[in-house]
Length: 84
Image (cartoon, rainbow, N blue to C red; front, side, top):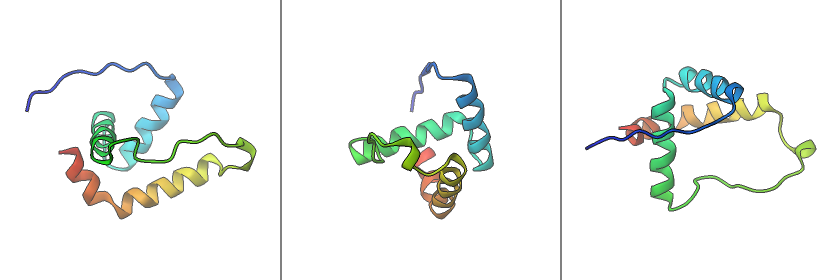
């Protein structure tokens, strides 16, 4: 399968935090984005809910990170398969 490059402009701090998270999960940025794109195609849409919320009523970043790690750990094999 041929590959291509994708250039994305994002906040520098967000990139660093995402790279750390993905490294903790055993992924690099490219693999994590590939997992997201494959999941989106399989789901035929964004594979999670996107909605406007009141930030004061949402979970904190640490709680979201903990929940995300837990979900990824539970589904690590599926993510690794999608990343191939």
